Length: 309
Image (cartoon, rainbow, N blue to C red; front, side):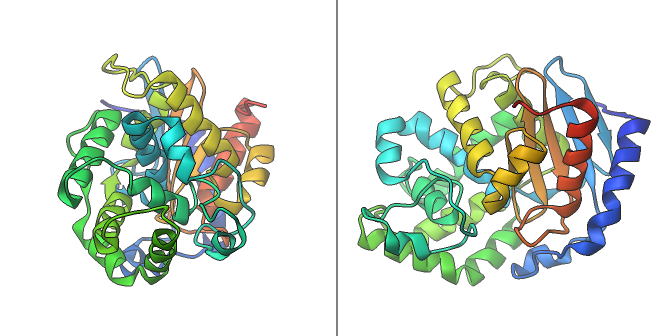
């Protein structure tokens, strides 16, 4: 579906791009280090199935931590709230997304929320399937339905790159296994998790997923209720409280919409009953969020009064 390239949106993207030099690519994952730091694209998908865009919205990127929202939705559909939140908490954290420190300090030793790595690993461990292939296939099928695109796929190069360097995540898995938060084979879980994070799409796909959440789980294009309303509400709440790593509070004050970022430079955002937003800008700030993407959302929120608060 063609997107209108609006001059006003193009101007805002050009303004936001001025800060890309202040950020840094996530080169600690070798495959992500190949990105162009000056890239910035945005698609805005309205629930009436119209869209507007600026930048190269066909350029693909991996979801990384954005996938945490989608795996959470699937696992809540699979198991229900009581089962999931017995193993993962609901509280924000002021620590970085890859911190292990709170696991030792808390009793019982369960991750604070599903948006930090420890919580996301526990959630991914709950995806139903006989083996890692079946689990990845179920999640990928779910995400393809959300994006309404058969072209969404796992970037095998990135998955391999992450699998070979994910020592801290493995450490978390063994700690969680010790405390019975996760079960099964750690290497199999790492296989699923790194492929989950390496699911690849472009800004328009991401904006459409945002629009599904904006409509409480109903897909505006297909008319299918892909996520039950209560689960969509839960996911959006986590996006507000924990979605932008340990910058979520500042983001809520300055921008004020449900959003989730990933270290590839992707951001999914939404305005309830309005539209979904998909952004790609791989230059990151020191919290791991797209520096130009955040700037663009600030400009959009201020200009169009997007805050839900």
